[in-house]
Length: 396
Image (cartoon, rainbow, N blue to C red; front, side, top):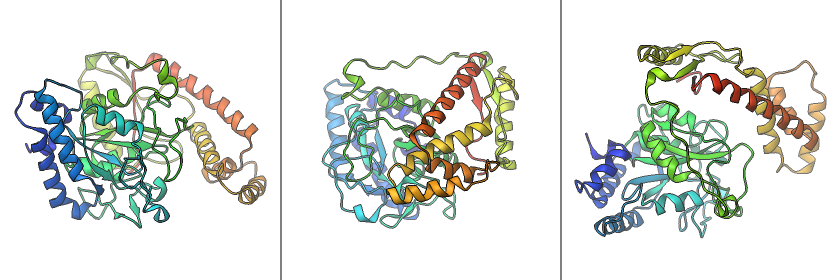
């Protein structure tokens, strides 16, 4: 197999064994990007000169006997993260020339772990779409079929991984931005628990890089295997050193079980608000069958499952109330008027979006309290199950 498609875990082992150098890995990755990315357009901001210098430094460090989790491994970074000396635009043309002076905390962490950053990956305008197009960098295509999308908003990262442009990437997610591109490109992503991974410096252009905590958005790892997600999450996890990180750090627990037959799994292949396509349902069925064949205890129903319709409406309220917080007062008042005119019986998601955008602080507190009830419901479910298997999106 080509070096470009080895896992990060395999590359780390080869580097430790002296079978390959970081300079060789980096040169091969750059050559592949220069050859293949014209048709895919995933690497929107290459940083090859600094990548080669970092690879040389990694080889020198290893020669001195150093060993770090990502030492010498080529990676990419979603465009929305600040990297000193490179543009951070979020795909917004007015900010095409904005260049931050400092790295985002996660960029600093992967560099400290020894990663070689090849460049930044493409995103949709404002990170708000399930495809990856903006007027600055153009359209990113799905590597498997250039007429299809790789998803969004971390679509450039997913496409880069599927194309062999680096072994790892870091992305972000508020409404599927890690999970949907991974699903569309056949790679892996993990949306961490809120608060587990610091995201200072993953902010819109010109916004101050403060150690604030978003209500719903997270940053997280992307890779070509689940084991590589573990490797990268261990590097990324932990509080911001400017806040809680002053006093404590994080040690993630081991998996509950080592053998597949010891796992208790709930399989859900449909959602009450949208049907699942036959291809995705068939994929879920194959996973369920493999779990059963491996001896796992598999269920398809549980009275402990929180109400998925209520959860969808609640999430929509919280998400869109966050969006409208930055709207001009006049626009917000118009939304409140429109929301007040909704039929009380209208419980559609369109109505939920409008109601969410018109939320008062009191409304938000009520929704947050219901959210805590749902969280508690999931805690109860996970005393009976170790995992829930379900579709990422209803269609390929």
